[in-house]
Image 1 (cartoon, helix red, strand yellow):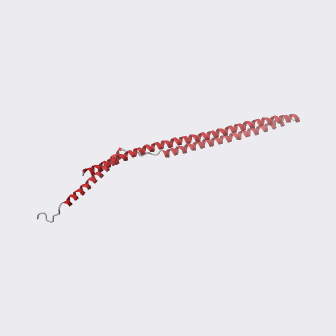
Image 2: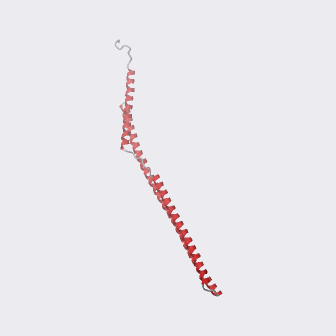
Image 3: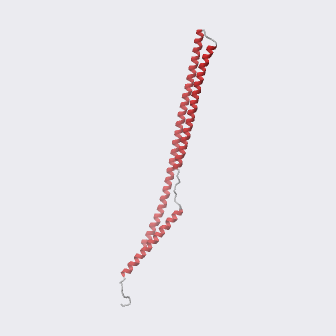
Length: 193
């Protein structure tokens, strides 16, 4: 009946081999999954940055259009003021003061729009940097160490399987020995008889 012990040993060896193979497949699948997550996160971050930069560019263009419009209106107001003062017969310092006041208001408006643009640009840069930092943190979270099977663990598992097979063989031998002893007639007095 050695076939039973050999079958058990083969089953244990097959179990160890399939466990090792399964661990390798799981590690490979986890590696592929982590790579996919990281690629998706990089793509997501790139799209977010592109969206923010486009929005920033739209706002800069809007400010430039506003500045051009204000400049054109200021020139038109100055021309009307010059014409009106000429028609009214007013000239000299009062007209110069009126034109200077219009120019000062125009420059104040330019300064306000420029400051607003710088503040918004700084806010966009900070938002993009915060997004990059968050993306790096997510990538670090995705990129956890992958448990890979090792030959040391394979040898330990094989050793356990060997001890288990040895234990099985010992128990089978004990059971077989007791069964053989039970088949012999029991003699109370072995010498009589």
